Length: 257
Image (cartoon, rainbow, N blue to C red; front, side, top):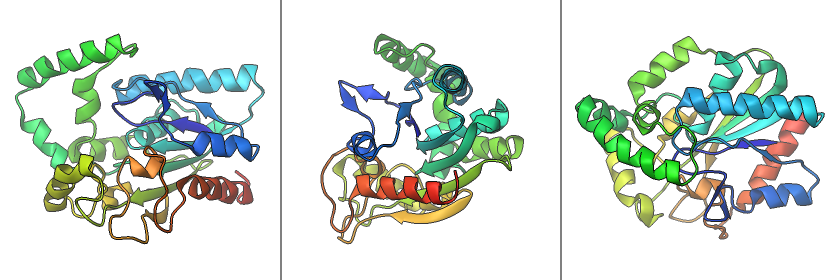
């Protein structure tokens, strides 16, 4: 399994694994886990090139024939570009995306209305900070704008799915705006612009390939964008996130991926 993280973070941030307890749980069940090693704010294209180099090393030096990619958030777009834009479908058996805004976020279209000069000025300081944190080629300007509905529409037309790769997707959903205080305001805003969401990704936008449904809880709060990757490492009512991801891997194995 090759894990590809989303925007704004790295595989490890301040020593914490982006994917919570999931990789450790996989290792306990004999599943080899690798990481993409992409930048926090690299552009979709540049991060995909990092993934390509990583994947070629796995094939050439570690004897991996093909990988099953699990990608979260914007990482799903990077993985799709890897497969279709860079022609690496020969080394990818499947792509599972979780809360990836494949069709963009209407709420992000507002960012395209900000004068480009002002946006680039702000992006300069974001890039500077993330370069200090280890990003090789941070590009907040293009990376963030790539999540708009307009740019995702263009992306989908330009990079169609490859037949030899199995695509499946999951969405997450906050049932209550206070389900995750970090996403309260964003959840309310996106409800007005995009409908049901997990605080960052609209449910409708997350469906791609074979849509496997919602990651949510039996309680009143639901699961946020961060909760969907076990970021908080806490149990949820009626839902064990690591076990859910293990079930994803077992389903892929049953399909021959």
